[in-house]
Length: 200
Image (tube, rainbow, N blue to C red):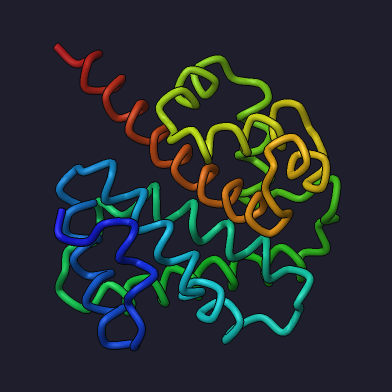
């Protein structure tokens, strides 16, 4: 793959980032799990989803959750990206939809916090309770798998997970977000393969 993880940090201007995201998205749509991983990492590292969500939400407290929801949705739905427009156009629409979904939940006066029905909360619950997801965790790169296991399975606070992993808290938060998104994509893939296997 022409764009390696090491070179993600070397991409500096917005046009280069858009091009890199387009390349990664094409590879991810083609079924490359490495491309999905690099795409999620690039989106997170460059703050592309976060800035798109911030255009809709004024609530800074919800920004992390909705950005996480957006990363999860990218991992699940990247196969639907057709390349008819720039990937960032597709991503911005997706982020807008996640933000609007959040606003609808708030307007409907559903309690948030412990009863949060966001994709991030659902993924966290799935990781802790479903055997298939535990098996899929083994497919995650180690840096993400370890962070997700400590945070979502063992339910450790970020600070404690950071100490156990020897990483700073922000790195652990980022690795958990990316790991959850990649895991969501694997869950979707597993479901699609299961349906195909069941058709005779």
